[in-house]
Amino acid sequence: MKGDDLFERVFESLYDGAYVVDTDRCITHWNRAAEKLSGYKAKDVVGSHCQDDILEHVDADGRNLCKGDCPLAKTLRDGRRREVGVFLHHKKGHRVPVLIRVSPIHDQEGSVVGAVEVFSDNSASVARTERLRELERMSLLDELTGLPSRACLERELETRVAELERFGRVFGVILMDVDHLGETNRLHGRDVGDDLLRMVGQTLLYNTRALDLVGRWDGGRFLCVVLNVERRELAKVAHRFQSLVAVSTLPLGSGEQVATSISVGASIAKWGDSVAEILSIVDGMLKQSKRMGRNRVTVGG
Image (cartoon, rainbow, N blue to C red; front, side, top):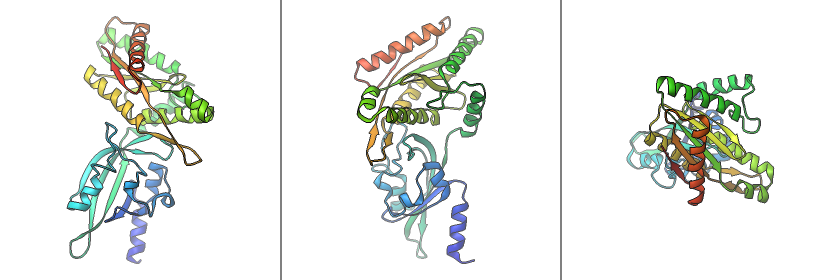
């Protein structure tokens, strides 16, 4: 078997997504696992440059790494390997957490002539999938988004309140509302608005820990129950959701993209609070975020 053929076979057989760039960061190879993780086919990306913002890698604060602090560009400059967790932009619009590993490619003289980036799903995908299958079996999934439904979330809240009263197990609640959803429906149609809700839902789902539960509450609102968390940690989770949705865009067939944001209210549940009281508190926090200009987080508790 020739060397090039062997490389292609090995490259395509990798379980993780991988792509190769030259010194100009032009993508020369893109394997099938990369297609599966990102939604982009090789024909969509080969020949383009990673700084063209195809994957739009961002950090947890929503900062664009492809045009700034890019690990791949650094490796091309100094020849060092790097490993970092980032969030890529899926072709369907949502954000997916991935662990990327960048290695330089050297020629016979030792000069850097390119780099390879390997990326893998950094979420608890197996546990999440199994949980959704169980909820589907119990008819507790929202038909539009495929996320846990309000009925499922209400059951979860009742369970967590009981555990808080009996065992002192602290939890937090995050309530999120898609900003200007009605305007999106008027400008682009209800189908686009529904796709936008699916995109936001997938971004939240892929960036939620396996032990937590996120679902669609009603209309353009989503709710997440976060376990074993203190106020500072709850704020970090809420800000991560807000930042990642703010840098996600929904592609339209015309080449146009629709951006959105969410307003967020969050609070730690207190011993003695009922489900209704907890929901009233986070709803108040959410309304405060909207009064302050939307696309922001307000945390109580």
